[in-house]
Image (tube, rainbow, N blue to C red):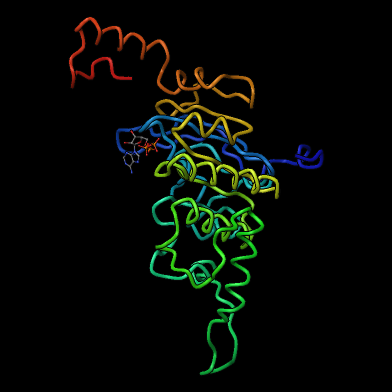
Length: 276
Ligand SMILES: Nc1ncnc2c1ncn2[C@@H]1O[C@H](COP(=O)(O)OP(=O)(O)OP(=O)(O)O)[C@@H](O)[C@H]1O
């Protein structure tokens, strides 16, 4: 990261945000800042509130209280489109790309370059293909070398790469990655983690959501562990070991007492009275 980037203000912030649904507080008094050229890892077990944070940052939901701030100005996104317009892009693992379309077509989807005019206007596939392959190469993905390849034939890591490359190419300043490595094997995950580093080097603010402490550790600059909608820990790279992070996510002492109870036969399967 360069000195200028360090000095820059956050691209987007949550300030004291609470989100309540009927009967449930999904996120409570949460503040976070996404800085350009930094990977912010949001960790948490199922139900911790990670998806809710994504929804608040990407205009899917509005906070019950607190504010969303972009470039220092409070905003109220009326739709996901409004968040995209200020450069906040989300890559969801399951729906990132369309398998029956080519690499080139997926890359330019919604912003197709054209040739010809009037009734003769058509998608400029040569330009789409050239752009897609160049952008993938820039991000270190070299195995894909034909824009006509169907996305369905690509590996999971390559598909993620394509979705990320597309978002960055079309001007994302904030990239929200929702569990990008959850369905991937070790090699594929490594590809995606390397890609995250490249994206950071380009000055993009990355929000990396995961429940995998190892992947977070490999890619992150700053970390927040969410538990039941509240930040239970915040730290910077190098300040905590992986073991400590795993313990923080699970609930440390609480988990230990549950395990001890199971060993002694005090807690049966399905007994959630001491659930963490
Ligand atoms: N639309 C909703 N209506 C009611 N409750 C909700 C709604 N969305 C989320 N919740 C609740 O808010 C809490 C946080 O959910 P959220 O989906 O943000 O967690 P998460 O960390 O993303 O979990 P996972 O990893 O399982 O997706 C949960 O208790 C969930 O049941």
